[in-house]
Image (cartoon, rainbow, N blue to C red):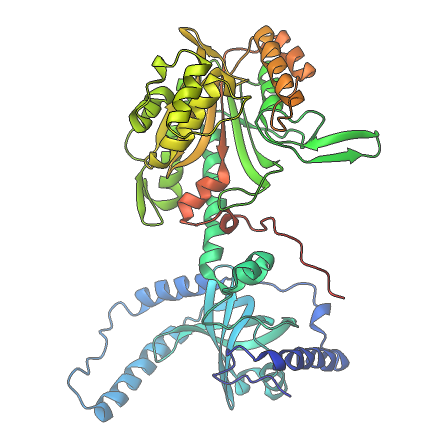
Length: 542
């Protein structure tokens, strides 16, 4: 049974036919191998152009060579009179262009085929886009054309020829030589609907990238976002560094770590949940401005904004504070949007967010007062906090202190309202174990979180550099851990030793790169901006 390659070849085969079609593809490969034409022995192919280059070069040459020619005007003429005039005009234009041919060597995946006797129109796709190709028996030879007719959609081919424009106006490649580079043994999804099964898209991202151009565009933009970040920070004299992923003490954030065992040393280790404590050690060492973009791992749930491994960027700058971090963040977000999107206005799921205006700055206490109607300045004791929480139906646990309950109010009443870029400042000390106290009010710390679209986008401090205070804060975290809090930090003696050596006043910040990519690519879920998101394993085939 031969796989149908006519104009209907892109229709998805029925389930009962799939096994037979797969068998046919393997039979074709076996025939090629028996004839000494095994595509898998080919080690390289010289590519001179990508498909987008072909189009751009032809259009440029066309504008130069045909600048003085006025298109034939057949307005009002009967079709039988207009047709020969259009044909004559096309042939004259074609002759001018063919006299200065753009010769190309292109490689890509065969995405469609239309066999028409002695000639075929097909379409190939590469990283830059796709282009139509014209393959004729008289140009490539009878034997090669017979082989080409057996190629399947999904095969990877190399072609050599020259660029031209068809009479219908489509820029194409006139093929003089075609080479099968890879035989596809699977069947691509139906062309016009792409790969639509969400779970399959994530599991087979390679197929998703082939079939869905918008998916490829998302990850191209993600790469540009990270490149823009690096370019911006290089201009601010920041140094990119790398720190350990396997650590004995996973600190720097309130999260449950993944645990593993290192056989060579006979020690239990954890995957990092943050980049913070090692980067601060480098500030102690005198590097002054450092950042890292890397994966961190948190043993938490899965939802539209959370994946257990995700990309975090943290940066630390000596001799500044959280106000300096706010200024840098506002400037950087604006720069990235302009660099990647060409505008400072982001539209996410129909909601516009303006990065061009100054970001709002509000304290957590004022935000809770504005949206919950509770003035935390009037809450003097833990009992007062619990009482107002009961009245407002904010759930809390016995271990929660007054500052914890303020944060619960913020999460319950405020976050969803923070659509435009907003810095929420001055958090309670209970939820900020690594942050400097506010000198005028030690119940609060110099910390901010930036929100957009109701999401936390980054978290920043005036970093605590008092080793005595830090030891006391770690001791409180140890108590929480002993009481069963799996997200509490633990005392890190080496980090404390570094602080005792002396860390200058420092501002630090952590950015969620994946959420930033979601906003700038209008992606509804974090899985849409992760090439290979975490998924539940499928049962192995028996």
